[in-house]
Length: 432
Image (cartoon, rainbow, N blue to C red; front, side, top):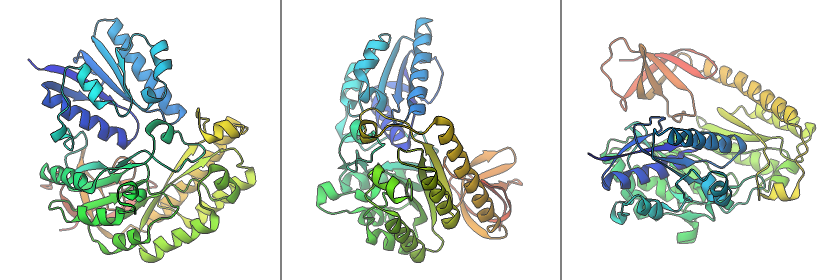
């Protein structure tokens, strides 16, 4: 009977990839794998934690405590903790949570496998046990970050930017395509910086073209693109390559010059606006997802009002909003007092999201009557759950299509006419 292990993944898509690599190695070593579950049928549990912001850290701690409780009640035998929280606060966690059987950082794959009596199979390091639906997968192209934004702890956790070789990424993408993956979501802390450390120049545009040559891959989308010094050739590749989705996730964080300077973003208001205009003039149908951080030290009410006006003027397709939280060891924590009250941060958050909700509704109404080629993600009641190329899985809106007995499967592409829309969803019918 196979040994059984439960790998619980918290946090971002980069953590998902780390867990998938670990699970493949464990499976090759004879373990039966379950994942993202509170199931206690597995006597060994690994929690892959997030340590990015306060809410994520709290979720990680709560999850660990739940499994410690299960261990104390004899439901499981071992609890291991890995990932960002463990990397950053290992000594404190060892002291506070002695019930945990081992703590591992973000680069401790060989060590955790060894402690589980499993050898690292280096030849299979590009292989993963996929936890996403079989038709899409994340491709993590680099680790760490060099930018040093004031509020961000990622460089403290994951270190400096380290690109993977292009050959290894192509090999991994081919393996994913052979397993049925049709959509690749390219991720890193900053995807646009890819290759600079290995090849002396940014090679993200070349990588995207190479990935598009893989048989079976139909869509490629780019996440987490830093706006400063955005490579112009990437704009051209996105414009001209039909397999690359007209979609980009580019965190702008703010628009006020003083706030951007205090954030150490390396870009100002005028450069930001010029960048957005370049993207939209090159690709008029481009969907831009962005994130903003409210309540950062130095964000006066006037600075926030400037951000709100900017969002209302430029009308982004997707917006996420975070409230500033003081993170240990960051530049902001060491140099700026966190003087904005939590209630005011929440007010700004809600005001920005309300503005975006109105924008999303208006943009979606303009899609009513249009026909889109969509990918089928799954089924819900009598609906096919689909996405356009302008929507990334798990973070963006869906297209709900009346099934009416249609013979389609997840991963299929179909043409859909949008018949109605809400703020965050489209509804449609199949066009034969």
